[in-house]
Image (cartoon, rainbow, N blue to C red):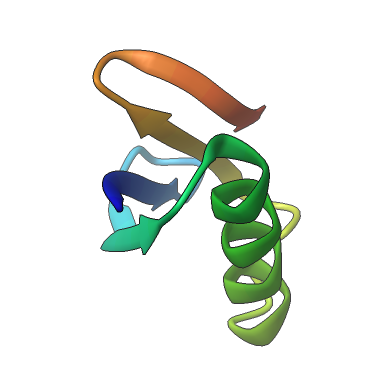
Length: 60
């Protein structure tokens, strides 16, 4: 298991969500991150999912 970091920002740059996700691989982490974004209604906000400096999901 690896640690992935999901961060969401609003238009002013305020951090709305900063959560650690543990997943077995990048694909699983992407699915979990997308699910969390949908659950919190943050899909359309600027967000990123990273692991060890690598960006896996990004939206601005």
